[in-house]
Image (cartoon, rainbow, N blue to C red; front, top):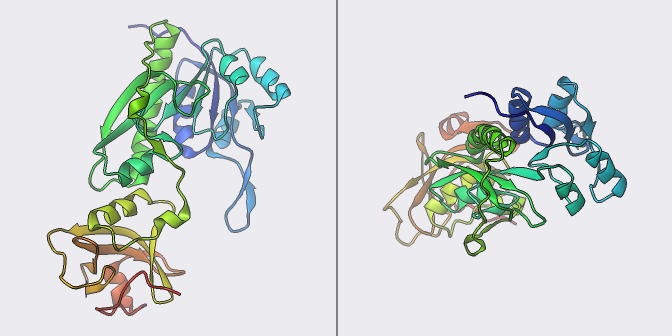
Length: 322
């Protein structure tokens, strides 16, 4: 089968997740006319102004880069309209698109969203899916409207959430799936063969933005929920708890089922061994396997115990701090 017609594209995105899709478009027969991304932001210890991964890739490809603070400005809207694009591809851009922008390209704006819509509309679909214990997630390519992830669906791709998947591993998988799916969708749009399907609003759930304080482990929860939180909040903001005045960041843990100890307060250290640190929870036991001490590296529990950097005394209670 021959290639579909080439489309003139405006690309809008900011993080690495978006850059994967931009690279796929650059490698395709479609033509990227311009790139929109968030303004450079301070990053790192020196708070140096840093370009987004999308901007870095666009500059390498010698593409025009636009970084408006808002698209509500009429002058910015005219600049975008004058690009005369067939379609705008939006991936984790971070700015709201007002109606004049949504209507500017001939075929409108399409979005790569990291969930199976209408489940997990909003800012943090990957983390929320893992937190909720969803067995699958995926990519939805959606025709954008004025609502938040409410537009008709053009293409969906499913994938399984494995028992050891973190947000980081799911991001990597979904970035690749999204890049492939958007190319298929663009070819359908170019040929006039796209089939928009309305979302069922009754099935919609909302993926609220992640807040740092959510990552503090509540030992009253069941071990399964705690283990999911540890995977969902890896690589950011990383789950944490307190041991006396020390903050412990928990990077990996597993559930020991059918093992709730009688008369032990949730958060109690039950056993400390080379295999891990066993902690009582609301139900079952959580075994901490990788953690990070203040100012230290992420290490397996065995290495931390061998270095005797901190005393993990059986009977002590995690999560209590002044």
